[in-house]
Length: 445
Image (cartoon, rainbow, N blue to C red; front, side):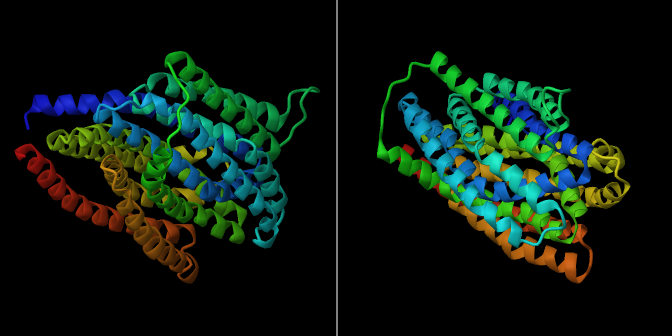
């Protein structure tokens, strides 16, 4: 492949990825703002929202994964030169149904908090935060559905600009509701964090809904086959995301039973890695769209080149990110907290995180390719093996038997990332051979 061709494929991916990067970083900075404000309030507050969000995320991931199937499914339809705009209302109905189910499941979980034996004082705060957060599920799901719908048409700038604006809105609301505003608004602590998130998520969702109505000519349409396709593509990927989220958030839950400070440390570490992860995640989304279009067109050359170049871009970025993280770990942690104990726990984990990032960049790119070719079952299988059969058992053994505590879990995550990349890479090589033979055979006919 010529250098000029390489630049063109990279440019095509970045055209989609850059606005998504902006939006994804904005989305994560909303969470980082929560962590920052919570840590300034107290380590106990940070520990409480860390555990609460860990539990909520494990439930919410199935909804996120299913809604995340919208853009690759519609991209494939566009690649086949079929109408995709008519699926706006079905997408909206699909998302709101999932939001209702998710909210109900979160509500059912709240009474169980008292039985989980968390450190003293955490349970009431966790329950308060979760109860208010339940009502923000509809706003968050609406935002993601509208963003996925627009992304399928490669409309990515406005949705992600909304997310960036919401970062500042969320921080402002957090400060007002957590610490209070004179005699007008009292200090609400944990509940204030949840209220700020609720307002921000509805703002993001409603703005994109209005934008879709103003941007596109939309008509009501219903086709059960569309829902079946979303579930077929999205369910494996949503379960795969759930498997991964349970592994990450399970660490906060396990460590929260030992001490709230470890749950707080896990939240800070996850916030840092998620900020850097958003770049390859955005590239993965772009890969999914471009590979999905090429798959619909049965263009194997474009499919393969977008896959390889996108993966290389992710790896290069994560290598740079690891170098930065390894150079200034103390400064990164001190941005969130001045708690000496918390800083001392986090710094050694960041060095382990640097190794994890390299493999994380590869695996998310490979997952994007599988979304594009609609083979998401493989991602579910690989994630289950890597995270549940390797990461959690090994991490638990190192953390509690070998007394490595939080570091033990992160060594387990590094091991699982290596296994995950190996499995996905092997399966993708096989799929490429099958796709090449299939498309070439049709050309001959």
